[in-house]
Length: 507
Image (cartoon, rainbow, N blue to C red; front, side, top):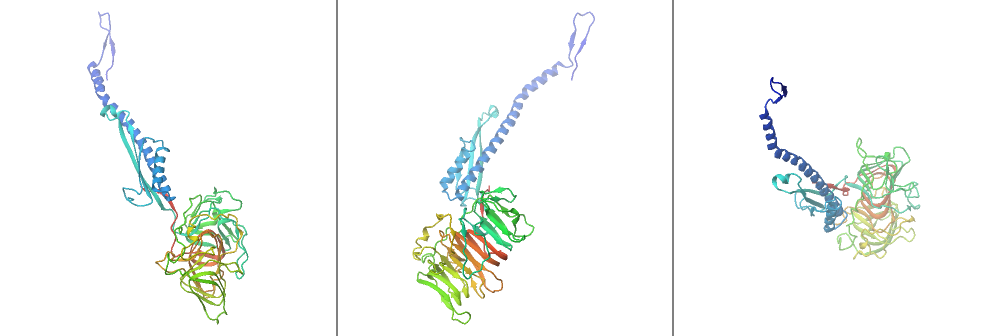
């Protein structure tokens, strides 16, 4: 550091500016000149580095979105080619990267998910032009690339109850001779309804595709607004009545979020509204034919059967697998031999295909297939085999006679599903034709019995009514469902259906 001073020298006519060290100032200027390239290089690193980081984030977001789009398409059943195009469109068009190169591998080609179906791998790369660095090294652009993998992963526990109908028709249940049911509303109030004076506990997930409105887990509006209707409705006659489950996942909303709780005490609320619908977990189950299950399906036509034997002392009636017009059991001892019972007509007096309301019944290791096709063929499965996921055309049904009325609380009775591990119907107890919307009624109004009831009930577009109390080792896949609790009721299946899945980024 130097200071300047003005010194007057006697005898001279001018002043002279004296610097402390003029040579040092020149050295600093020269040093600065030498440092300029380095300073510009640092500036270039900062500017181009920031640009690369920004572009890297943009490219990563595009890869993530593309992978999710492809995995979502796969989850909807789209072909791999469609999923690939959706990933490319999402990455290039929706993120403004029209010049990017997008590589889509279905299934992934690298990493822990390599070769795993249902997952999609997306790699997005793009050339980014340098602003400063090219001055130093002559490289005008660099490639920025990112990779992502997405697929469906479990979002809930395994399911115990699956309600499939997004917009169930209005169905009311008439009075049924021989069966006492508590009074219930004549109007369908929800895709899943929990009514009565008891608590319903479900050891598994409750998955409901109905999109009717209500509120979500926070009390905010959810679903499609419907007067007095919610996707799930709980109408307690006592303040303690609730629906408790491991998970409650619903496309629409519920009537009151306070009516829904965790299966295990102390856990957070299991309710999740505004969710995506779940697929039918049994959509690939064939209809019963001799070729599908030669061990348990019998094509013999056995007509209609009414059993009204003398209680206790009457001889037992033995029924064998085959194709029936109807079966009605009013009293007496009845044994169903193991196998599959196809019922394709209805009792001309009651108009009910399967009715078990009295007697002592042993149906151990059986499955009942109920169809509204009077010409159903156990050889070909026609016409039911072509139902698939088609929605029945009728949307307003009004009062409908049930297809099944069964009191599983009969003293000394036993109802268990088909026990045949090699059969596609293993574990099934009731299977109703997919296009058949009729009501299935299962009742158990007393615990003072030694009877048992278990198995899977499947009625894709049908309505299920379960009335009574106690614990049910049962899984339900139905169009809509109503629980009418006499006292506390529990659904505790020994095995669960697949959980709900959502698309997640996994890599």
